[in-house]
Amino acid sequence: MSLRAELENLVQVWARTHYPQVGTGPWVRPCADPRHGHFQTHLPMVAGKQTGTNPRDIATRLANECTPPQNWAVPEVAGTFKLTSPWWLANKLEQTHVISQLV
Image (cartoon, rainbow, N blue to C red):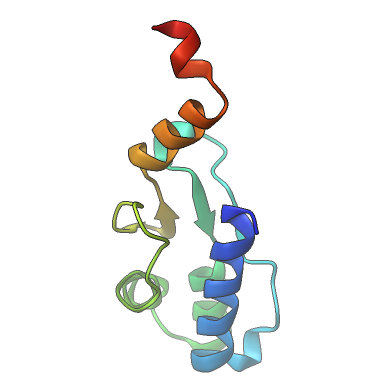
């Protein structure tokens, strides 16, 4: 399972548990600007609009309750829920032998 699929599954389960009225997504997508992280979700914006809840509060709950995969940094809340991990990126580069070719 890809990391994006794994994250999507985590967010889907969390959304079904806490905001079943928002539907099934997909909720996880790559960040348009890599400086902002690897992945993001717009679930807090959708759930906030449908429930009248502050999207930042939803994003904070999601970040606290939806544990990312091992070796990923703690999610950050910046309007949307974002996941980033320098360790994951280094592992992926190493797996594709990019690092070994640079050394």
